[in-house]
Length: 202
Image (cartoon, rainbow, N blue to C red; front, side, top):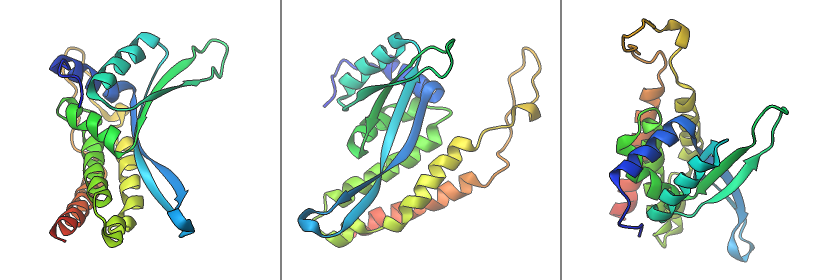
């Protein structure tokens, strides 16, 4: 369990950081089954936050510690002499990512749809892992590439800045998306829910 001192203000701040500086994705991982029974591959959900200011990453780490998720750090090299080095904080895996996203989802704006899709993915995988049935564990495996692609599509489905009305002192009106990404995500969400429901009925 996370620290009970975790505040709504901290969760809202973390959501803003994830919206602006974070990356949500599914990271492909391969492995060998025990007793040498072939190989397996699953895509692990991941949250990466990067900043050239270590104070921001330090604050994220404090909140992660309160949430109770595991995390570690990495650095990005400077590609040009005038670039500042970037510090990354990374949390990965269904349990860790779920702990974070389930708490910040109501505060997210830009990455809300990505987060909700990954939350459903985490719920599905946790349900499968808790089952002793090999059939349940592999049920819906064919959806993984679709989910991975949907998360990527959501990441790229951003408004064209040059098509926006940008009048001083007036809020920007975004309008509706020109792609069918939202429909695709709804379709995949229904499939995930169907797999979840099927597992729970067994």
